[in-house]
Image (tube, rainbow, N blue to C red):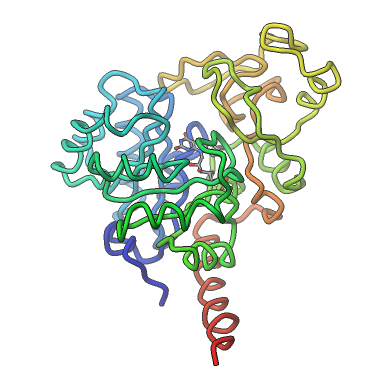
Length: 340
Ligand SMILES: Cc1cc2nc3c(=O)[nH]c(=O)nc-3n(C[C@H](O)[C@H](O)[C@H](O)COP(=O)(O)O)c2cc1C
């Protein structure tokens, strides 16, 4: 059975983590991943404290197993961290901020029994996060979907982060969508894998059906590392699918913010706000969710290069089981016999 130190740290069976993805990774997805023995993560980005509490409680209704929440620092609303401390999920993952500014929240989370995991884009950031008290690190490579913190690919970043943080537990993120990727991440020095794009195309994710379908058809070469979807979060690099709207912007000569085709036009309506205050317009930071209607083509279809490996919508638990079985198979039957 595939067990690593991240399993021990988090009290989970398998070293498979679903990424905390704002708007699309809600209680249902997180609970399904955790029920299958992985660590599910609720994306709290853009939620206010009350909505976050409700989502954590909803996950708890669906699973008694450990799950995590994700705190996207530029979107932290007042009282959100206190709500997490009171609700006590097994872990909280932080992204996109200075670890040193969060020493006190990290200390308070840990005192409440919440493990703190910091997603990093560089070895230097990982070192700072560990020094600030993080229990574990996620090393996110350039291939990743959604917002991308660094510029080094997973293959190069993971060994570098491992060297920087000694034996602190670490998971790799970016470009991983199956057991081969999990085995490779472990070979590089990680203790597990975080998958985002793979878990968007699940029965339980709250992504819009058109978004899920588009993932199944997209190839890695059709993803774009850009700052295009900047309304609600400027100057933050992310990886998205080249949708017809992106192609239209490219044909227009890639004009700057303020001069893009259809800039500011409505991009549908939202049925469930949960404190979300980013505007639903073309080039908005929000991805299309099942609780949005209308002109969703104007929203960000986030996807990593792992998208080429995503060819069917599956139950999230099935992805956890297949990933673990395949990683075990790769290690036992492909790698071990090579050593004679
Ligand atoms: C739709 C989507 C939304 C995301 N939202 C967040 C977020 O709110 N917070 C966060 O820490 N990371 C977010 N990420 C990045 C993931 O944490 C992770 O690094 C990434 O998905 C890994 O690459 P992969 O998509 O190739 O698996 C998001 C990724 C995707 C695909």
